[in-house]
Image 1 (tube, one colour):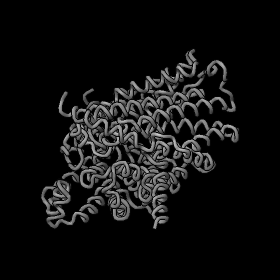
Image 2 (cartoon, rainbow over the protein chains, first blue to last red):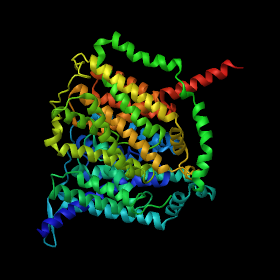
Image 3 (tube, rainbow over the protein chains, first blue to last red):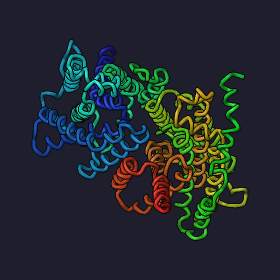
Image 4 (cartoon, one colour):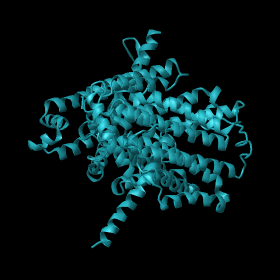
Length: 288
Length: 339
């Protein structure tokens, strides 16, 4: 019973850390550029397809596809930021929502055209399959790997944000872009770099998540709510907020589906509405 | 009387004068001609009446969103919740022995308005993103509820066996859709007249003021919250009527009437026509649905691609939709005409 509970808890943490990895970029675009980007899931999907294509067409090993998925999506993100997103930073939220829904629809149609509507399979290396015993508990190796990767990335991000000059510039741009610009920080460049980083992480998350979340063309819409939820509940522009929100969400979702399957997605949606009523600006949101 | 209310009271004559001066106060010839088109379609295009009534119903639905989004400025991605609620209310009534159309319509409006009023308090809290998420979440909750309560709603299979009585005891809902079309057109027109009156009223003006500057309105002694609550409730009621119309005329309610796809497509139609202009809702819906019908031979996936592209293009190059672009073109033409 207890072991069972810990197993569910662990699955929830693995699921939550994946959500965090994908959503952190959304938190960046929202907190830094004040842009509601509903197309964020499309970048995660792109990363997933890059991973699958490299593995099935060219036989690249799974672990090697991950950095490529990161770089490929980050590049696409940077190009789109320079050409399209940039024009809408000052637009109303409605325009941003419409624009990004449009992009999402196009991404879904393009993915269906290119790869068909079916689920894509992923063959994990033997090393990452099966279970390992940790303190007498049977844990999925892949999920353990997932958590380890996300923990490493989170620490790297925290270091980047808190300890480096670049991080200080980003934080000042979040606080007040105009003033940051005035003291000689190249806010435009920071926006581009952060957007690329965020989309790249989403792509990495999409590739890592094929085994957990699945991968088919409806991916961006299916998980859009989850990504938005993580950011809206956690509060945009921070690392800690989305991390806590993603873990809470992941645990509740997995536990809900495991213990009370007949209630289904109810738990998550109710939780979200309640949390948003209690914290309209997010758990760690700043008052605007 | 508090100071704020006093100031508002003093400003009232001026606001009313402005409302009087609004071009919307009097019906223009163009508007009359516009409404003659669907009437003419009834006689000329009798083969397309089924599609026609679908368009009229969706136009009413888009009109309800226009009040919420176009005038009150609340971006909602879950408006289908009220459409579906109205549809299920009317559908369940018809299925369980009460097939009188008009009372079904009113009850559906009442149920949707109640749901809209209750949820509006959640929606008016927070800012754009929170609102977006809450409307989305409420929409998903309604969808899940209908999905799980299959013993009432029929779940994924939909609610069938809806039996309608004759309209006014005279007009049977025929297969050709003549009654359905005329019924939908009259309901749409009545709702439109109501909405037109509403947006030209002082209340409608204050809604626009809230949309333009929500921080300044309290300084003028006007409560933002109560205005948004009212607008959202009215929008929900109209959406409920549209849903009920669909249930009554097709005598079926599908689970997709509550789906996210419906909410999202509705926003697309409204924006295509031009939000915040009432007529944009009707024109956008008609164009969208006629195009969808023409291109239905196409794979739905490609249809989705073009819709996506259309959205991106509208946002980048054609703010204000078709009517917005038409306005700009007219203004440019006038400038040219006057040297």
